[in-house]
Image 1 (cartoon, rainbow, N blue to C red):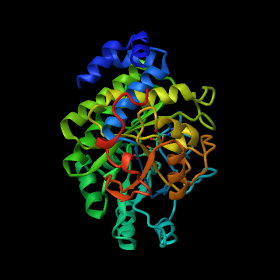
Image 2 (cartoon, rainbow, N blue to C red):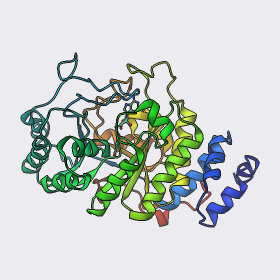
Image 3 (cartoon, rainbow, N blue to C red):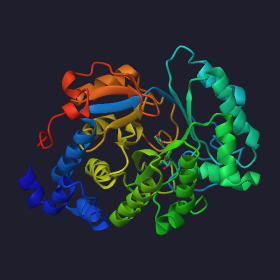
Length: 384
Ligand code: V47
């Protein structure tokens, strides 16, 4: 494989990686444009196996989207309804939202992931009570809730600082932030596809503040629409720079654009090669972010499996209810069981590890001796 990597023009990048040197902006652009998926994938897989061996993480989680009423008009969004009375608009009462957890009393869920529209009329107490109620129902549940975009919206709507919002939500039970809302950090793209929500600097600053409060978070990248390869690399490097400061990001999550039922529906969805390349390049560029996650609802289940050989070590979780992608054309199921996730990871030749949100192992269903620890993994290069 090394000779193929050299033929692809990536020999110097391979050497940098071998020497533990950080890749540059130009390296990132070259990885994206080299045209040899196998070569890029092999490099990413080598890195992935050095970090995690064959381990592949997933969690037992539940997604709740409490409202789709949203004042923002992102062109890629199929989920939002602009006004409370619009066709298809909904806002769960607190009891309805809590019922989603109560109804699953017998499930050993470890995480609730909540993402909402930017609702203009709800009081701040809706969100604090939502969190506090979930903690009352199940004190051990990890609450990964509200994107940085939602935090910025709350601050502006309720006349608070971003820090005050985070502190109040943390007091009510917030444990970490999900990575949504990042889209593409480049101003050129944001102006076109999501001009009326918080900008990249504020998104990153809110994650910085959350990390400062001891919370962990994720960072996403919406790819496969109008962004250039350079803008993808720029996005990754901005996430990497913040991670150098705080160390608070756990996972980078590329999100494949889904074109159904939104204002960018004329664009094609990104293909398999692009999806595998994005995940692989992310693994190589983000030397300081421990996990690269393929969100199986966004990639599709089969491609998520394949991505486990292209830098990915995490598949998110059981999810159970999902609207953002299904309204935008995702053909996956809305839920997978832990048995499904275990089986599909094994079928891909990897070892499943159920984790909690903070990557503590909850259950290692059948880790083999060879795969149980990164140090015992196949030596670098074995995948080639
Ligand atoms: O911010 C919206 C994206 C995100 C579309 O942190 C779309 O663990 C594709 O952030 N096509 C929400 N993407 C989901 C998200 C997420 C998912 C899984 C795990 C985590 C985590 C976070 O979904 C939004 C936006 O970037 N999105 N519409 C669409 N049509």
